[in-house]
Image 1 (tube, rainbow, N blue to C red):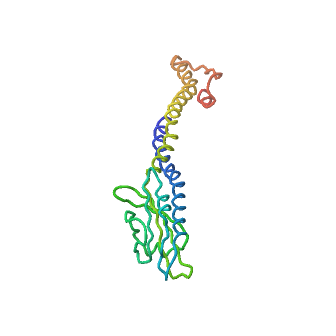
Image 2: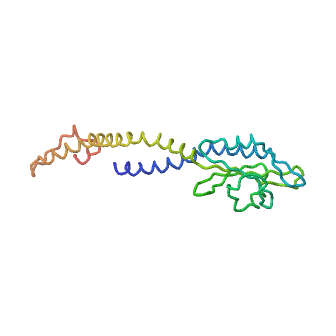
Length: 213
């Protein structure tokens, strides 16, 4: 009974870590999505070529993060960087991403200088369909990791009380449950070898009644 509990404990930690990462990703992915769409609204096209109108205050607001580093760029169909940061890695398959449906927001993971980046991207198309551009916003994942660690701690710390308590309750419950069997064993051990008299069944557990009979 105790072995499964000791096995489930690390298993529950692993499952908690997986789901806490998913939960931590959701709000920050939504924030990245809003940033991508905000930049997309500032993209216009001249003869099919994308142009970006981002004021200095808008750029400062985009980077207003005290914990993580935020990068963005806008690429044309040839993969040329129209605006943004050279620090943000270029996507591996730009043509496929630029060819996706305009307005949809997707996500991918990248690595920059040993740091994990979460990147949100979307495609904006010109009204006449002649031009397309790829907008990407990426940020490091320190806030996500901090939130994930808090979720894990809030779930795992109570387990340090619950699991030992469960062990005590299992031990207590099985001890009481096996006590009638122990008494029956002792009564049989005290009988003489030739004693074939009936065993008093008043205190024999129901499961052992056929054996006693």
